[in-house]
Image (cartoon, rainbow, N blue to C red):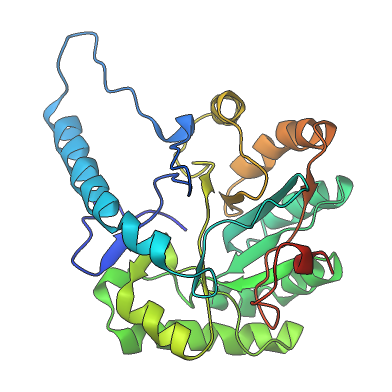
Length: 280
């Protein structure tokens, strides 16, 4: 789920990939950027990039109230923590024949079950990886057919991307409709209402690992340790590079030692499940 560079949300589009969490709102340190410059000023391209980020953030803050008001049956960002220490790992943009197998090996080694939000065209090209995900206890989510910019698509175009992917995924797990995570985290009110009318749900995240930022994995791990995820958090990661695997090689043993369990998200027929219901 790559963020579109320089994206400025319009009146009904929201990019939620800023590493926010709900109640209380807490921005992980992994999303903070130090803009200091030894010379005391920023180059013009950096100034423009900062301005674009600020405009996008303002749009996001204006719409946070809307997301908080939407019921979990419509938009899910985190699971109820309950009494258990549980984390929900999610991986976007796969399956990738170069990087996904090593990630699956690592998850199996640590007995971790996760959720993979797949690009439909990739799932169709690499069916062996999709079958392996299911065989090893993971669940599938819908991440569109071709990962387009949803800001530029009509509602009909977005639904075509989603429905086409659902048809491919259904051939693997028998689920008619999967939880939807739009490309780049784009949020459209029209799309949300359409999916809600069809009793389908958007699945976002509450903790952003920022593994797509081309920063050293050790640096990202240090940032996550400084402000770690909390029970019930849905973690956003990507399996179209080796960054998340390298990060998890360090983080999974630590989280296991801290007593965390790992569950897949409710993504299909069990979309109405509670945190407890996901254990099955």
